[in-house]
Length: 305
Image (cartoon, rainbow, N blue to C red; front, top):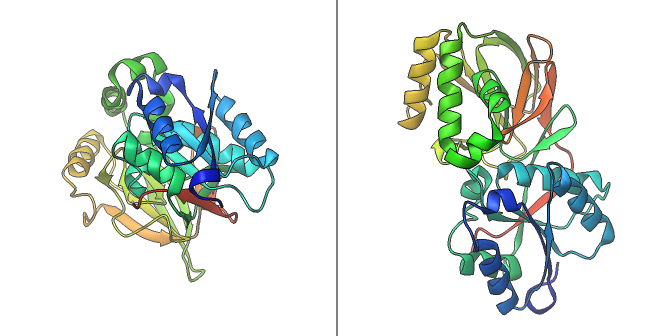
């Protein structure tokens, strides 16, 4: 990958997400250009458009770095588009965080001023991370079933644009009030090949330790590891859901006796057919779902000066 004067930086920009931080993309582009990069802008006009743009850019071989400028959903689309190119040696991914939670950006330290982000895109080294895959769809941070997946499936995009994270809080309250939780059968494959079976009211397979912004859900897993951490919530009921929400905001979920955190390289989750599976904050599959580590190579630029 080239650096500085001849690095070709292609930015895929989601203008809907860009409303949250107006002008940031333009400032990042200016900073990257000042650092010697050649920058091109590709604006999306519909859901899924980032995927096709990223696929075509990867196949063209014209981009040294493919940048997702948007939220975690935009990043997810870009990563899946790059993978769909069929190339074994993909250009590195860059991130300009414009979303509601920006979980991947926080996980990798891809935040800060426009000047810092632009400089990293132009000059920063690339590091390898390991993505997950759920029924053929890649995710970079987490995939799961249960309350959070149902909240994601029920979010009104208009409300999300207006109140950001508040839309998820309202969705969570709606799910708690809706009634009893569903049970899921979870079969985990441990790193040593051992199989364990569990029942849970929610299960989240984490690739990184952050969740919904900077809340810590699985403290010991990192993207650089070819590993998942399964977080299983085992206590049913409305009160338990409220306790879980409060414990997460206070950083107290790890260590609870009714929350299991187990390392895994694969998971099979079964439950009500067609129940939603969320990945990186969007619905990416329906039950039953098979989740594992993607065998491809994904590199990310930035996070270090």
